[in-house]
Amino acid sequence: MPIRPRPTEPLRISILSLPESGTMAACGLHEVLGDPGRNSDALSRAIHPRLVARRPRPFDSSTGLRVTPQDGLTGECADVAIVCDIHLGVGESPEGRWRDEIAWVRRHLEHGSLVCSTCSGAVLLAEAGLLDGAEAASHWTMADLFRDRYPEVRFRAERILCDSGHGGQLITTGGASSWQDLALYLIGRFCGAEEAARVARLYLLGDRGYGQLPFASMARPRQHSDAAITRIQAWLVDHYAMANPVSAMVERSGLPERSFKRRFRAATGYAPVEYVQALRIEEAKQMLETENASIEDIAATVGYEDPAFFRKLFKRRAGVTPAQYRQRNRFRSVTG
Image (cartoon, rainbow, N blue to C red; front, side, top):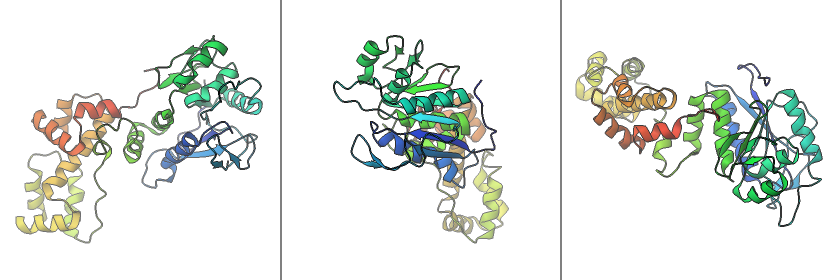
């Protein structure tokens, strides 16, 4: 079984860039994977990504942009090693390339690390003989190369994420933007589904056909000095699902209804009923992302006895139906 660090330790990820690599995956992975470590509000495990290359000095990428790696290949093994995309020109062969990088990958496998590739980075793993007998995803343009040079590999051009053997230690992904799927998979696997969903919303990762609303979350409450409203907000955290919560809020505040509503909007930026709805929909999102309860049960749990009204409200606030939101934001294992 792969060696896994204790959950309290930051997850160390090394992202391997080669002169044959572009910069989109390397830079994108570094930024997105580093978010759980940079976000002070995140309650999940931190991730510390590092960009590595054969030598720790600047070099030009395949697109001509300068890459400045943070480390070489001689340091200690990370918990996760990622091989970025590889661009080969027409007629260029992988033969004899990447000897040091292949040794680096093998060392990580022997250490028990998770080894991943994004897009055409699977070619390096295939050249090392690590994918023989296993399924592998890669960019669809690599199909002929895999057929001719790596016939023992079961190339899966249609797959985005693929368990590629070694007892679950090898993960390959297909397509130029599949680094996004890999990033969310790794965050979900090591930091939890809720953190993966948060990062997906923040960076608009996944299916963006419905625009930005499915990724939006309730705005952070304003800082204010109205003690009466602060007290009601704290109470509402545990009571938003009750029947007629706004009436209860007014009663607990001790203020006239019109004064309460005016002060609540001034303090929070929301009308009381909008604030309750936002809390309920945010809780429903969390349940849709992490639980298997029916949509009717989720509606009742967050305070809506009428599932049809809940679906209508959810779509108005999130831009998609609860079923569509669940389908797009559930994070499963690659084998599931």
